[in-house]
Image 1 (cartoon, rainbow, N blue to C red):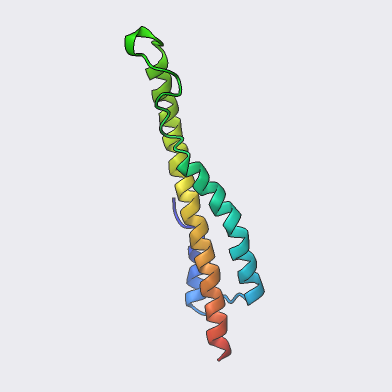
Image 2: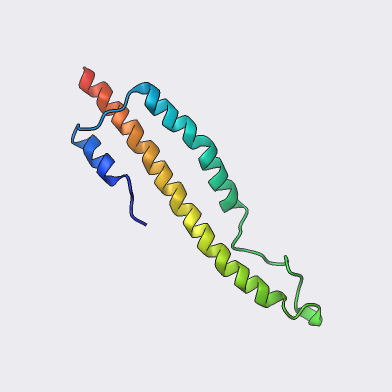
Amino acid sequence: MTNPWSSLDAATGEKKLFLDEHATTQVVNSFGPYRDSLQRLITDALDDTTGYFGTSKGDKNPLAKLLEDAFNARGKMLTEYLKAQLSQAQDFVKTAQDAHAALKANEK
């Protein structure tokens, strides 16, 4: 996934984007719960369903391994997506902080 904030980041580097302290604080405060939710989903290991469907050992549940593999594949896709979302959100917060730093530097 490409960084959707790259143009904002570039504008900040070129001293064309500034963000005041209140706006920066709002971005950072809004990010916290979102970051926590994404991290909780990532930590829940949706890409590892070992044992959720029982076991196929001893012919207990012959579908267990098939279900596990199917859910793990989807869980892996979801986990990769969540990690990309977390990374992009972190990039956005960093861009906001950089824009605020640019404003402070410009005021000197």
